[in-house]
Length: 103
Image (tube, rainbow, N blue to C red; front, side, top):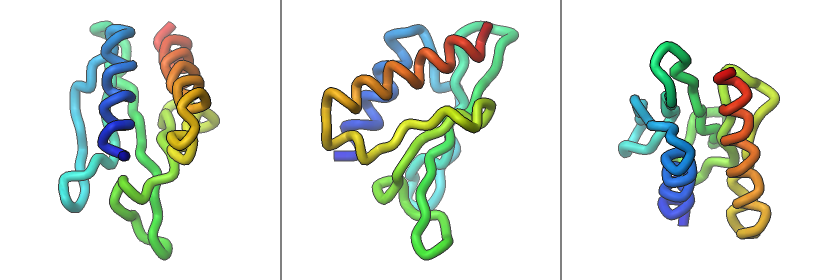
């Protein structure tokens, strides 16, 4: 299920001309953060995948959120993936926040 939502996140970014220019992975090749960029000279910006397991970083499939490093207050919560309408709304909010950051 998470792979589907990571693909949806990547697709949503691509639909707005954002590219994942670098991906840092942890154990098992799971993403820890993505660097995203749309325009040369602006960014890249960082999408950090948040997950913890007994105080230690956990695989992203146990993750609970994604945040924009440059905007600490901007996060989307992966638990919303169970509610498709809320999930798509927070994807839109994340892309809007990136758009604002880029200006």
